[in-house]
Length: 316
Image 1 (cartoon, rainbow, N blue to C red):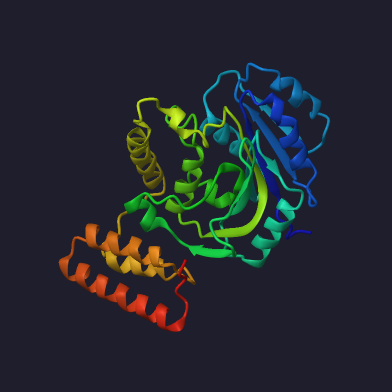
Image 2 (cartoon, rainbow, N blue to C red):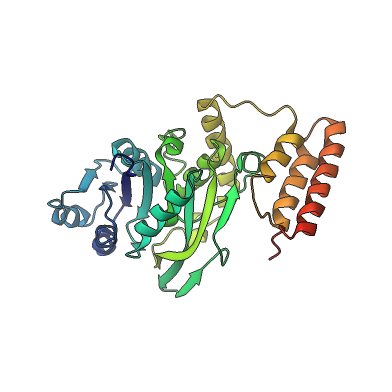
């Protein structure tokens, strides 16, 4: 029992009283139980507090009722600081876990000791009904620090599909830029985990139900900025976020980017063509040493041919 992995489920809520009971029930009714479920209410103005109170007698349910509305990142910060689990699972209050989600995820972590970060496929329900799978099979996605830092690549999925080892989350949470990330704070989890060296995996079984409704900020992201400036603003927010996380972890840029990029690519057991393209662009654009720029591109192409010849190259 000493080796048992302790689990924390963090539910962030703001004015989702009509959905919150379903989210809590889905976390409570897992085939393997969470050690703790922490509900962070971001100063809701509906009857969310009453809903939370109805679950207050359940032993493993804890609640944080904030006095001031500060957004999703603030809820992640406070929830993590209160959590004690070895693996942190994130759940938006309008989404639902399938009953076997935690058991399947824990089996996945137990089989892969090197796994730091998992996201799974999911089913949309409500206004839209469909299954979203980025791939039909489970994937080892390797490390992604370089491609995140230089290309801003977003390797993950929606909040409710994410779970991360505590030692990884502790390297970037809490994050002070709460106003920047009132919504879409899953960006902080996905980019942050990559920047601090998480090895990421994808679980192909759809084990989360993602509710699509009128107030869903992620699905309706065009509503975030009526002037279509959202992506531009997000770029500058991303830069501030990256600088903070890198400084917090005393990160220094690699001297030979081409060499580091190739080594990072090799952590993906079955790379895709787009993975090679991503690293090729990074070497071409950002490697300052001309000799290593050329050599890196040659080595990358040689590695591509090797994977192609051995059948390891994953072609979509």
